[in-house]
Amino acid sequence: MTLILGLALVVGCAVLVARALALPRVRALHRVDQIAAYGFHPQERAAAQPRALHGALERIARLLGTFFAGRLKGLSEPEMRRELMQAGMYRMSPLTLIGYRVLSALGLPVVFLWLAAARASGGAVVLLLPVMLAIGWLGPLTLVRRRARFRLERIEDELPKLVDLLVVTVESGMGFSGSLQLAAQRFRGPLGDELRLALQEQAMGLPTDQALANILTRCESDGMRSFVRSIRQGEALGVSIGHIMRSLADEMRQRRKARAEERAQKAPVKILFPLVALIFPAIFVVVLAPALLSILNTMGAT
Image 1 (cartoon, rainbow, N blue to C red):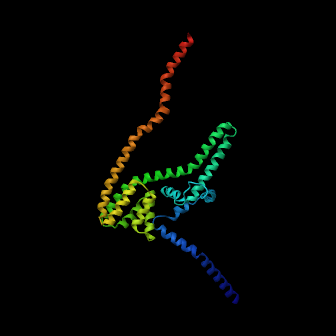
Image 2: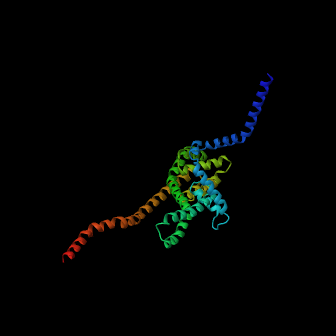
Image 3: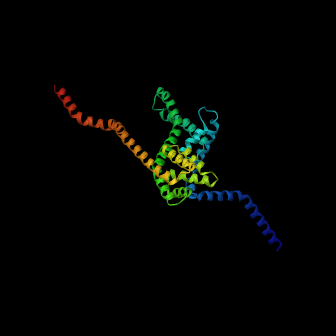
């Protein structure tokens, strides 16, 4: 009986110690579950976890970025953070991006030398090596900026729908915060992510005005600037949000129409290059080849 009681006490003590050690982890998971209630789902985060090779590469890039960040001129960590925020890459740190640039700048010339060692002359290798180095250094940053540009274009296209939804919900009697939460549930993609992030900041105690200003910092575009400034000025002056949203909806549609017309005007210029490079040579071959063959046959006969 004494032995059983002693074993029970030892097991109970072990359970209490394990519970005490795991308490910070449990609290952290509880906070993550609270954040998930505002739109980010744990399943999506688990699916987005990097694989082992990608995780190792990311650790190497972070170490290189930490080493070279203070030694290379022109590498501003706040600037890299701004580029990543505009691209929606919140999980990547600026130091990791710097490390990827260093890896690319070192790896691309090495691969080029390995491929060109037996095929190209020494002069061509010497001339092209700085080009490969520049491409490797600017390549990751160019990809991030390209992703940011496509992301901003998608947000610009979805903004009129957001404004229409806010007009309907606000004029039906719902508060502006409730309208934003409803829009965050309806929208997917970059705009929905930004709305859910703004709601999380509000839940953590940040005022609505500052949360909207943070959206503008992450998504610096004309439409988003008009949206945020209109709401902030309306709240500061006491103007009806519904009236502001209706005026903003008209402005958004006019801006989207102007943007579509601009793209339509650029289309002929963009079509010209593939037309000259791909279609004209084939037309010249079809039209001029018979005449050229006839001239050659005539000259050969004489």
